[in-house]
Image (tube, rainbow, N blue to C red; front, side, top):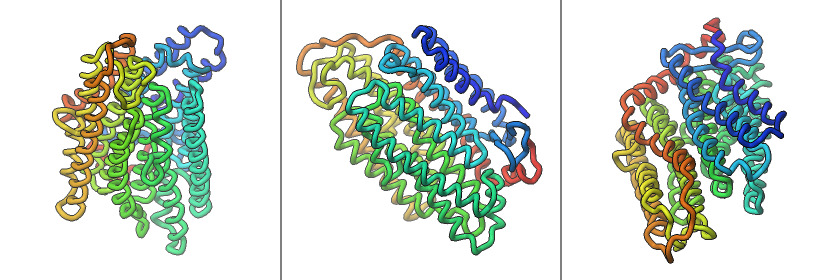
Length: 499
């Protein structure tokens, strides 16, 4: 076994525990330790990405208990890519937080590390029960991070977030229990094998369990009509927390892809592709409603939160197409939307610091101290989010539109994506004009902290990197989509494949 597979879990686990045990150490020491641990995940993720790129499925059996017994971690192209995106996003977010946002409450860096533990574990785990466990780790950490900094607005938003996610966790347990009661296993590869051999009389109960899991993952991923918790929660969180939360919805979408291409995939007989008819209308409605929410927003952070929901709808549309081209487009767009959303949340905080008491409210306010710098950054982010060339948002949407075959689906997708892009452009243009072009008086705020600017620029430049590296990256996501739709290597885990 290659022990590199467990490093994305061990690093945040031990560093987070050390930060808790040594909570009285000085703030500089905590920051250095947290920064070192978070950025160490980047080369680890690159190493795993290079390992996964050979197309071989790797399994790490904890305690050497072979599948389907015990706890396994599984590495393929998909979760290697998700680990790298998470590491880059978290690295810049914790860098931004280290300039003072981590002082708003206790144990910020420990909670940040445990959040990474939960996210990385959710991507790497090979069984449903441990997916639930890692979901709970990341959710408990996110509860505390959301409330970090206190304030009545954060408490109100946090209550909605906590209650809804506790309900989702209860439904997750019910769905997992049904599958275990019917099939006697929770290993995903073993579930795929047993679902394909299940008695037809059990099909309705298996379908019910699958739909319960779909509801849970849709809640985590902020899919219509289960997205209402997200705008207020993301808008009330501190900037680095909101930036890290940009990957949270992607965990829910990852779970949808993993479970419904593997457990209920092409080998599941009558249950194969059971959710495709649901995903397609949900994707288009989520995208459309999110754009309306962005147009109606009166706060910059709320508008950005609705743009996160819009990205969820776009990604879900690619998944709903059910072909390799659609999945590849969704994966490329996932990288783009995660990095740009994180950058825009950080940028919104930079803007708020120069607007004083007006914060991120979309009203006329005193001029910014650095309008050219912040305006240029906002312009790049807005163009990329709206899907205009030459940035990565344009390439992601182009890949998605090319993935759909001519017909009613193509008409619906083209209409919603293009009109939605226009709506996002209008919302961002309105916000930019109020913030940058209509000052009510001379500038009076402070100049932006250089480290905070560097962290924001680092994520924004991700859009340019995705364009420059578009050809090899497109090849990688296409290979990832093909691997996801080929279930034979996953079933070989149970039939005596590599461990």
